[in-house]
Length: 80
Image 1 (cartoon, rainbow, N blue to C red):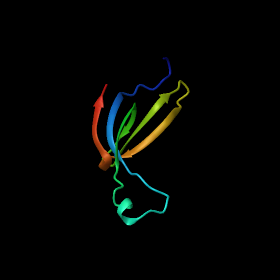
Image 2: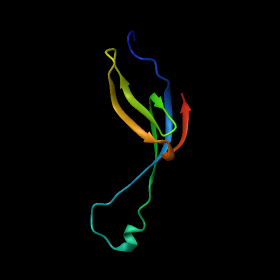
Image 3: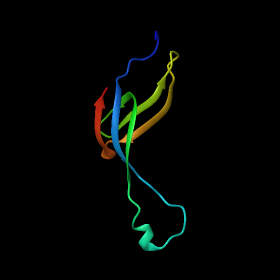
Image 4: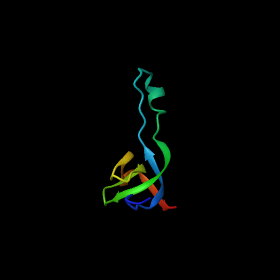
């Protein structure tokens, strides 16, 4: 894998927001809760405020399938 940036592969457990675009009764709307997520990817950046991971890295410096996740939403980061 010559030329591909070396980044640790991590498993991230985090909480994501959910939404409903439909009209509904207030009682139904109150049942909406955030979702617990698990993502695996290359750790590109880790700051006080967020982490950035991606699914794929290429030899020409590309990153595909990239997420920036707020550190406030991250439950844990485990290096694989």
